[in-house]
Image (spheres, rainbow, N blue to C red):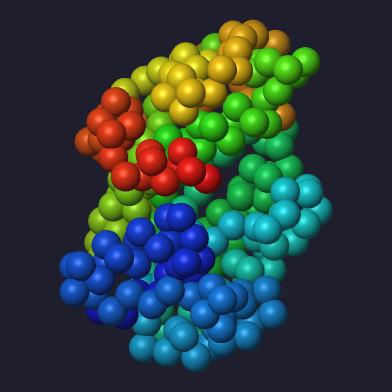
Amino acid sequence: MKIVVIGGTGLIGSKLVNELREQRHEAIAAAPNTGVNTITGEGLAEVLKGASVVVDVSNSPSWDDAEVLKFFETSTRNILTNETTAGVKHHVALSVVGTDRLLESGYFRAKIAQEKLIKQASIPYSIVHATQFFEFLKGLADISMVGGKVHLPPVLFQPMAADDVASGVAKVAVGQPVNGIVEIAGPEQFRVDELVRRRLVSLKDNREVIPDPNARYGGVRVSERTLLPSNSARLSETRFETWLTEPAAQIARAA
């Protein structure tokens, strides 16, 4: 089966392409650096010829509110239009658990706009909501600095390894469209501040992490369960301590 992965050279996309190829599918990585640009439309019609499934794991290069909205709306419209012409049977998009609870953020408002376009189109679809990635814990610390310390809300979340995100999306992509949302999440719940602290310790990063009820998560106010998946979420297998021993954690260490 020919499956085109939009954003197929990024963190999740590259893992997804490899996973699908291991399953003997014809997985094509589509990204600007492979000659496919979903904003301009360059290469899009050609790469979608003969495709049964399109998986969109692309992301906006800018987090500016207006720019991120423009990216997701323009890109998604162009993909859906070309999918209709090509006769694609299943559109899959990766989004985030709790998106509809994070609308204080322009990024998540843009993701909701993307999902709305997908739902309104005629192509059968599946939207995968994933929890946060272990690989991004250090980055979360970096954007949460206040007065030389890391301030994070001590709320619950259930992050997962990027490899497991790719595996979860692959399972949805090769299955039947659900015309709805599938949630995927890690096997363990943590406090945000606790897990970021543990990650920094593993990196020998001596920054102090402060549990701060007034701190924002990526600029958004969150409550105890804002970031958690529902009870019906599909849970992955990789536990945090296991992930720390794997090559992915060492690559993230060097980043």
